[in-house]
Image (cartoon, rainbow, N blue to C red; front, side, top):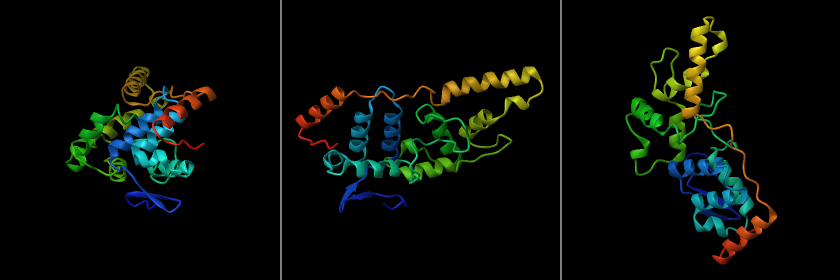
Length: 207
């Protein structure tokens, strides 16, 4: 798979067209993070989102899943992507939609959500290259990130330190991914039930 804005992946000599719009990738990110969706359903949902019905009928689904993860993580094979890759916290794409819109307008003069189409890689690369500054003269998203990155323990004045801690807690609640993202494990019975459902639709689900 080419990492330069790929459009297809190849499995066993067959090309599978990727739905490359960034909104689809963000939907996949939400599916992975949703603790109410089991692992089996997560895989099926992502394959369908990215490849349509071809993804569900692929004979080598294990390889297709591997390529899907590689695509979504821009070749890094990571389980999740941070909006601010230099931080210990993880900003939530959905919660930060307004900040992303205003930040793209601030730096690039366009709102990605108003476009009919934008490749996932272009969107993410632009996101990673948003303006930063220690003095606050940067895009709204990174102003928030700058506050969250501050080390409160280095502030001597108790009142100022407590104010920063309170502000950080508020911002984390408003913009960050929840710490509680444990996946729901499916029982063997639930997995077989899900397989039977998709087989009724005419799909052969591979183990």
